[in-house]
Length: 181
Image (cartoon, rainbow, N blue to C red; front, side, top):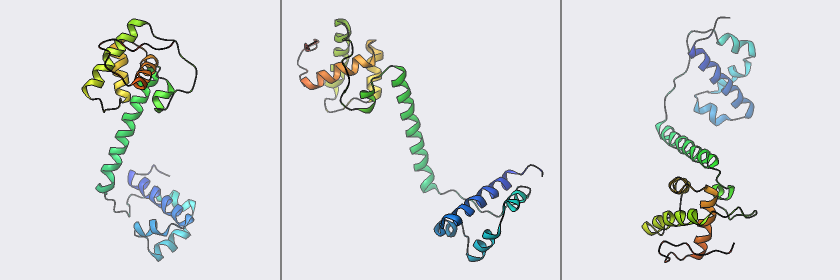
């Protein structure tokens, strides 16, 4: 057999899909592809050798067209998933705690406390962001930026901010609230 054309590969893929729809009883999908009763009966008669022979054909029997109403939302979803995965990779590379990535309360032991200089740097950067928009929740990108701006680990940034959020008082000008260590 000679190598099939891209058209014959498409026909084979569609025929395999149609055979699967037939096997699963998905008449709606078959009707959507314009398979009527006669085409379904002929599809039932196809065997593996017929599909193999279809790979050598130089023509196809399909009329393909793009459904833009589905295409653009699908691409937007794929783009959003790709961007989310990139942020997750950045968080993992920056040693972000699992709790921050899942945005749930910490459930395991206490990590080492950052030194005073690091705590102050994180406090300054965080309180500035909160004062700019007190109602906004921090996004994973915000945590990454705070870690980069202050040189603190994301684990430290996360734990400090979670603790300070519980206090709910940003009136300490430039000084983070004391915490029990």
